[in-house]
Amino acid sequence: MKKTSIRRATLGRLPMYLQYIRENVNTDTVSASRIAKGLGLGEVQVRKDLSMVCDAGKPKVGYETKVLKTCIESVLGTNESTPVVIIGAGRLGQALLGYNGFLEYGLKILAAFDNDPEKVNKEMFGKMIYPMEHLKDFCKENGVSIAALTVPAQEAQKATDFAVENGICAIWNFAPFRIVVPENIYVKHENLALSLAHLNISANS
Image (tube, rainbow, N blue to C red):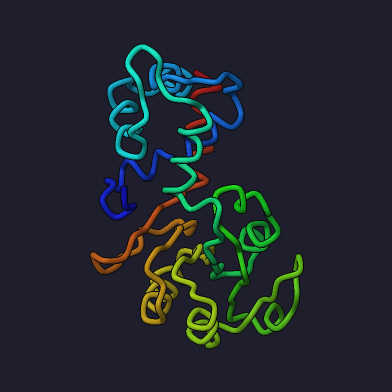
C-alpha cells in the first residue's frame, strides 16, 4: 500500500507500534490486541491501523512478527535515510544535532542553520552549522523537505515562513509558539514545557 493512501493519524502511530515490536516482542507472532494493551491504546484502532499497512494478519493468530515489522518499516522508510535539517542552533538544536537515534526511524540530521555569526560556519558533532541564507541551496542539493524548528518563540513564525519559502514542507516545531503554515505544509508541535507540566501534575496528584 502506498504511503499516501494511509491516513495521517495512522502514520503518526506507526512509529509507536514499531518501537513496541522492536523492544518487547520476541515471539514468532504478535496480535493487535497485545500491541494495543502494551501501548494503552484501543484494540479496534490498532487493528485498523495494522490492516492498512499489512494484509498478512490471521484471525486468532495475529501477524508473523518479522512480516509485520517489515511492513511497518517499509511504510515508514526506516531502511532509507530521509534528510532533515535543524533551524536554530541553540542548546536544543545542538542536542538534536548530536542525537543519532533518529536513524532507527529513517531520519538523518544533515546540518543546522542559524543567524548567529558566533555559531555559523562551525562544525558540531561532525555536522555543519550554516547561515540561514544557505538553506535554499542546501535543501535543493540534498533533497531536504523536513526541518526541526528550535528557535525562540519570537522568531518562530519568521523562521517558519522562510523555511516554507525555501522548500520545507514538513516542520517539527519545538518553539513555544503556534506557527501558521499553508494547508499543504505538515506541522508536528512538540511542547516540552507542557509535557513536563503534565508529568509534574501526575507525579504530585
